[in-house]
Length: 436
Ligand SMILES: *[C@@H]1O[C@H](CO)[C@@H](O)[C@H](O)[C@H]1NC(C)=O
Ligand SMILES: *[C@@H]1O[C@H](CO)[C@@H](O)[C@H](O)[C@H]1NC(C)=O
Ligand SMILES: *[C@@H]1O[C@H](CO)[C@@H](O)[C@H](O)[C@H]1NC(C)=O
Ligand SMILES: *[C@@H]1O[C@H](CO)[C@@H](O)[C@H](O)[C@H]1NC(C)=O
Ligand SMILES: *[C@@H]1O[C@H](CO)[C@@H](O)[C@H](O)[C@H]1NC(C)=O
Ligand SMILES: *[C@@H]1O[C@H](CO)[C@@H](O)[C@H](O)[C@H]1NC(C)=O
Ligand SMILES: *[C@@H]1O[C@H](CO)[C@@H](O)[C@H](O)[C@H]1NC(C)=O
Image (cartoon, rainbow, N blue to C red; front, top):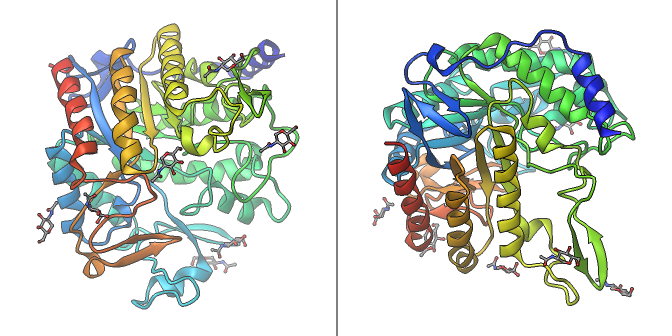
C-alpha cells in the first residue's frame, strides 16, 4: 500500500531542483554535510530555542534585549513565526490602543489581512517591518532564524484561514494541502517572505508549516487524508520544490512533529489493554521517514510533548514512562537520520513544571547529544523585563506579557530559572566545541 503510494508520488514529478552543494552556497549560509550542518567549511552544531512571539513585539528594545540574553545563554538558532494573519473585521481593534473589549487583547502586528477577496499584505510598521527588525536584531547577535510560513493550528491565523476564506464553509482542514486556489494563495505568501529575506545569512532555514496534520483544532479531516494517503508527503514535496525554485541556497524543512508511519507501530499497555501508539501509526498524516528522503527537505525536525500527548500515562495498568518514551522517540529519529543521511533537530520539546523540567531535561538533552543530533531546540524561551505596554501587554488568545515576562504556556524557561537554563547553556557549550 505504502510502496505503491510512494511510487506514484515520485512518478507524478519530473525533474526536481535538488539542494545545492555546500561549495556553491554564499559565505555565512548554513548548509548540510551528511548528518551534520556546516558553516563556512566548519561543522555547525547548535543549541537553539523557540520564540514565536518575537515578531509580535512592537518595541525594538525588547526584541534586541531578548536576542542579547539568548546570545549570552549560547543560543545560536531561534525559531519564530513568519506569519500572523487576521480577519479584516478585526482590523479596527488592531489600530486602536484600547483592548478589544470582548477578547481583552490588542492586535499590534499583523502582516496578513483576510477578507472574501483573499489576503492583503501589510508591509507597514505594524506588519512585515516587525519581522524585518527581528531578522536584523538576530544578525547583530550572530543568531540565525528558522522562519515558519503558516500554522496547522488556528493560532495566529493558520491554514484554516486559507481554507475558510478560499474553500468556504464545510471544507475540511486537509483541503489546505490539495486545493489549487489555497495552494496558490499560500505560495504567494511564501514567495513574499522568501524574496524579502533570501539574501540574508541570518535565515537558518525556511519551514513549510508548524505541525502539519490532516486535521486541526478547528476543522476535521476528510476520509481522503489518512495513514498512507501521502497527502502531507505530496504537499511537502510540492512546497519544498517551490521554495527551492525561489531560493537555491537556504535550507528547507517541514516543521512537522515527526510522526512515523510504521507497518508495526509501537504499542503500550494502558488500563490493561495493549494500545497502538498514534505517533507511530501515521494517524496524524505524517510519514517522517519518507518525507526526510525528499530532495528539497534538507534536514528533519520533530517535536516532543510526552506529558501532554499521553495524559493517560499515569493510569494504573500502564507500562509507560514519560522519560523512557522520550528517549525512545529521540533514538528513533536519530536512527532515521543515519538511515537517510541527513541532519536531525529536536525542534520543540517540553514538560510543564519547574521540577519536572529539572528532573527530565538532563537525560533527554544528554541522549540527543549522544545520538549526534545536529541541533537541540527547546520550547520555549522566557524573557524577563520586557517593557512593551509597561510590561503588561495582552497579545491574543491567552498570550500576554505579564510583569515584563514573555508569554508562558507552562513550558517557558525564564532567565531567572537557572537550574533549567544551565542544562541548556551546558549543551550549548558542548555544541560550540563540536563546531570548532
Ligand atoms: C478586501 O480587502 C481589500 C484590501 O483592503 C479591498 O481592496 C477589497 O475590496 C476587499 N474585498 C471585499 C470583498 O471587501
Ligand atoms: C475569520 O473569518 C473566518 C471566515 O469567515 C471565520 O471562520 C473565523 O471565525 C473568523 N475569525 C475571527 C477571529 O473573526
Ligand atoms: C509496554 O508493553 C508493550 C507490550 O508488551 C511493549 O511492546 C512496550 O515496549 C512496553 N513499553 C514500555 C515503555 O516498556
Ligand atoms: C479501564 O477498563 C475498565 C474495564 O474495561 C473500564 O470499565 C474503565 O472505564 C477503563 N478506564 C479508563 C480510564 O479507560
Ligand atoms: C509534573 O509532571 C506530572 C506528570 O506528568 C504532572 O502530573 C504534573 O502536573 C507536572 N507538574 C506541573 C507543575 O506541571
Ligand atoms: C530585571 O529587572 C530587575 C529590577 O530592575 C532586576 O533586578 C533584574 O536583574 C532584571 N533581570 C534581568 C534578567 O535583566
Ligand atoms: C522567574 O520569573 C518568572 C516570570 O516572571 C516568575 O514566575 C518566577 O517566579 C521567577 N522566579 C523563579 C525562581 O522561577
